[in-house]
Length: 234
Image (cartoon, rainbow, N blue to C red; front, side, top):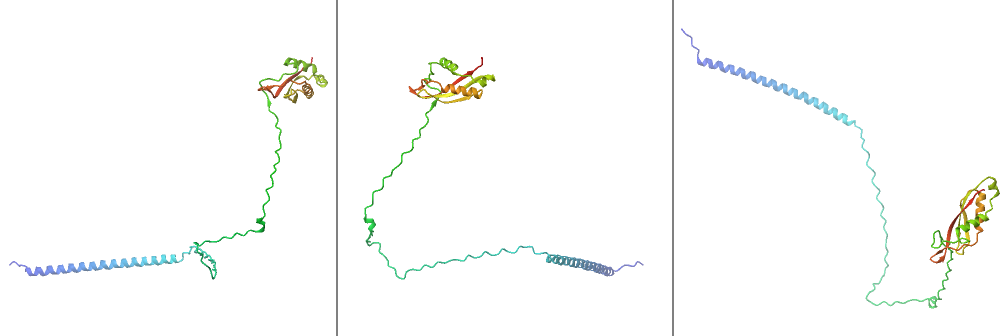
């Protein structure tokens, strides 16, 4: 004889299995929730300890801020009191005002005429006339020519004994001015050889007779002249 299972018995067995599985799932969820809450609590306590430590360190930071600058002193205001007269009168500008001029006794006397101003004449400074180097008409030496002048110089020169004994010879260049009247002035040695020869050359030049003066625009003028004198032993 075959034994058959009742459908009702199978249904009861399925309900029991589902109930057990739901219970296991619920317990697992509760366990996980408890573990997560415990972990968050530990993290919170650690964070609280860190915050407290940071605050304690911050409390020991020295204050390095500079004190505020002192406030500037307020200047004392000075007041000036102006006192008005107790009584004053208002003058009408439209009314005519009579002016009275007071004349002293000294003002009635006539003033003396001003003293004449005497100015002293300015001193006359005689300016040296211009000395020409190039003129329209050259000065003419005594004798009428340069050759005659050189011959006269050769006859007039006395060779210095000290220069002759020492064998000194050479050419001395003398410069002088032929004045407007033909006389000689400002003779000087511009190139010398020996003091004795230079002195003799000046003596001869200053001994010359008057020249015919040079002319510029038809008028006698001062002219600079250069004369070489040769000293030569024979």
